[in-house]
Image 1: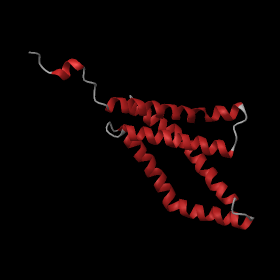
Image 2: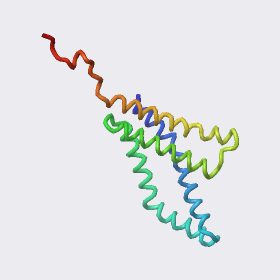
Image 3: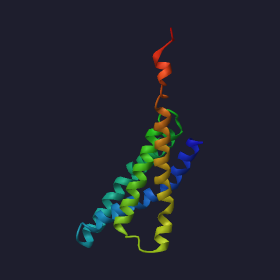
Length: 143
């Protein structure tokens, strides 16, 4: 159940990751100054993204899916979900201040992924902890 929830959250997070990456690339291009350097920066990012960015993004997405399904590494997947969702919300919120109901409604699934990542992390850490030993069992056999 937790693995399926992790996969669902990873798929829901995908458009927000792409939007946050686009905002970061566009912000870098806008900060370059002139119109010519704007297009030069966009071209430089595009030339890097075509061979490496798409492969890296797809590989990272696949790795995030795999570590979320694995029982031993699901806590790491939950940490990644939590951090990525928080970073996406931060980037999107800083670029475009949420001022309307429609914008808040658009960010609601990403906020849900943030909550699910936190819940998955607490549940996985709770299940990794060894069970507490009662004082009666610690004393050993009675005489």
